[in-house]
Amino acid sequence: MLCGEVAYDAKAEARNRSDSLLGTDGEGPLRRQSDRRVTRLGTTLGGRQGRWIWTATGTYDRSGVEVRADIPAASGRRNAARSADRRFEADLVLTGPVVDLPAGALSATIGGGIGARDFESRSSLDDVDRDPVISRDRGIVRGSLDLPLLRRGKFSPFGTLSINANGAVERLSDAGSLRTFGYGLNWSPVEAVSIIASATNEQGAPTLEQLGGPQLLTPNMRTFDFGRGEVVDVTRVSGGNRRLRADDRHVVRLGINVRPLAATDLTLSADYVATRIDDPIAAFPIATPKIEAAFPDRFTRDAEGRLFRIDARPLNFAGSRQAQLRWGFNFTRPLGPVSPAMQNASVRVFASEAEARRAHPGAIFSRAEPGSAMAQGAGNLTSRVFVSLYHNWYLKDAITVREGSPALDLLSGDAVDVRGGTRRHEVAVQAGVFKRGLGARLTANWQGGSEIRGSNGAAGDLYFGDLATVNVTFFANLAERFGGSGAPGWLKGARATLGITNLFGTRPDVRDRVGATPLSYQPAYLDPLGRVINISLRKTM
Image (cartoon, rainbow, N blue to C red; front, side):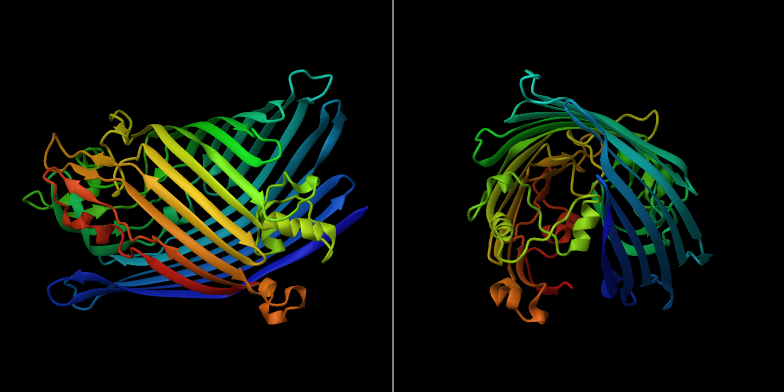
């Protein structure tokens, strides 16, 4: 029997404009205007053929950006940069059982897709017009297998065990063939414990924006020169870099999940993740002596040695290594009775069916009749209170910027980002409650301190203090509060939201060796907005 469904997702053109000031050149203020336009069209189809489920998606996106900026001491001349990005993608995914085995069905997911993208950019920089056009055609074939080996019961004293493997080959017209493959193991010795081990290797090409983005001059960028221990205003060059190479990512993960109370949705988990990336693609780092020694052609200084220009286009590092341990708990409790069959269900709320199908291709979707037991159980399941707390402990974070150069230890004084090295410890807390169309959510994040060392113990050393931020959100689904299924059509799909970002207005605290804060690291420079209150009304069709 063949059956199918179709869901459409279309959005009208969205526009955004921003105006900013870039300091002065002595004759007057320098200004920049940015205009952005985005259009998206999409559709999702799904169906079933026997025991197999299929999902097809298609999207078309178009975006355009235009930036106009004054050029210092250029008598009214402006640096103009324009880009247009057009992308089409179509994908098909099939999921189903291949053969029934004693421990369960060998299941497979296979799929493929095609795509075409054109990225056109135009800019004028240093009186040189640049007009690159980059195109990329894409074709991909991917598949995965899940093989159950043991099933809990009298024939398996060792619990449940399964192994899986996945692979993909993607062909890009401008970057050649890229491969992805991985394998893993899932073992549950007892019902309350599950252990996961996996390894993945993935190659990734630079984006067309990273390759061919329009080049743009930004004057008067406040920059801390760690070599001289001073703040200078530099001209920063941004845009694409046609020399970028694909990166190669290797990830090994070992995790354990424990549910100590059978009747309570409480999960304790711990994950160890080790990542190695060859030729990682990165934004250009900050101006430390080690970075300047590795990329001297990216920095320009005057006769007195003062930095006045940085070529900040993206680049490839030689490699990076990272290891981290993440552990914590997640607790969820429905606010109402839920049938035993639904008590262990994982809950995620989507704005529309089309969004849900994009997030879970191949999944089975069913609609509950209003007032039915299934509808009431689903309503109670989504009406819930939840709390989670996780601690992230970075054990290693090192980058080799160029072959033959010493590695940068981001946990011990080296840095590539203006906000300092990697924080060894981070804690994230989430809590929320939702019932009958009303909800509230709280997120809190804490980061430990870090430091950046300058050159040979010079005054360029900076120390970053601990930082904690708290965000709260309150929302109401208006149709659920005013009429339910009988609510007016204009209320259906409408949500009102009040959000407060950085509730207590905390900002980063940065000090040098004598306790002073350099100008470019003043709290309001690192976080210009501080506390933000946002009120929104959104309606989905």
